[in-house]
Length: 312
Ligand code: 3HC
Image (cartoon, rainbow, N blue to C red; front, side):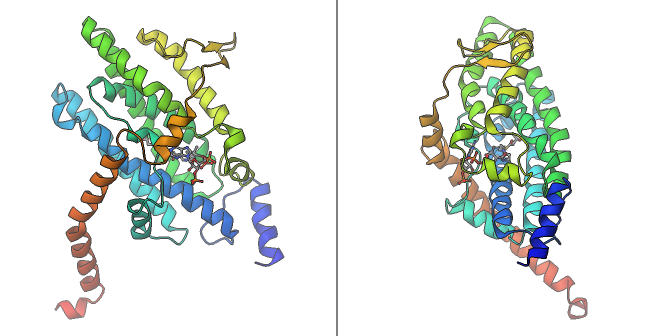
């Protein structure tokens, strides 16, 4: 690295400009982007499993079509993010290998089971709702390919959140059993969705540097509080009770108190001891193996097309 390269990098950040793949960047900047972006991509792909579990069991053709569209969107989000991460010099094979060898993370939230249809509503409203709050600022991330990938992802997440809210609203306007199913799902998904934002800021080893590099625009706690504050009026509209009796908002609608998050549960899930960790990774491994022939065929075709004479 020359001081001129570092100075140029610092200038771009100072001007809140974008760093592009062609630009020099510190190794540590590149490394943390590969870490966060590949984790994000893995999360999108693994995140297809909990909802995919209900496509064949959706209560109507309309719900089935909406859920299929949502799950397909998530696959696309994974593709955008793997492609954006590959601009940093890694490959999809290397990223997938790291995931399957347990060397890369995916979001803790996808390690919970989906025992009822109401979970589809809770995931859309809470998980995709949290995703929007966490990811809209990423549309202004300093790394160009990441920020641009996030613009389209966030537009689609808004549809995901609305369809989840609408599933819960239908259930809350239904029978007592349906109302109970919706409340049970929110009780189970509420606290894990708050963990999606990461550990408290004072226990986050990455936040300070990521914020200095304009990758993260806000800390974990600020975005978590924004999300909870957004939920309160929506929960009232649903007639759903958020499972936190200590939750308090001030007159401006900002969170001033909330109950304790069980960080030991978060750490256990990150260590692989969540309810569905083994199942999620085994399913991803099997899908990777089952898809080997497609990758081989595509590579063989690309090889032949790159030597058209040989084909004649
Ligand atoms: N699940 C798994 N690991 C998590 C986590 C979570 N919910 N929250 C934090 N971690 C990990 C971090 O990766 C880090 O470990 P590492 O250094 O080994 O990577 C450690 O816990 C400490 O966390 P930090 O706050 O220091 O880490 P970050 O600065 O990276 O912040 C983050 C964590 C807020 C998740 C950030 O990485 C981020 O914003 N990522 C992009 C968004 C994303 O990945 N969202 C995941 C959900 S996927 C999704 O939204 C799909 C949608 O369709 C629902």
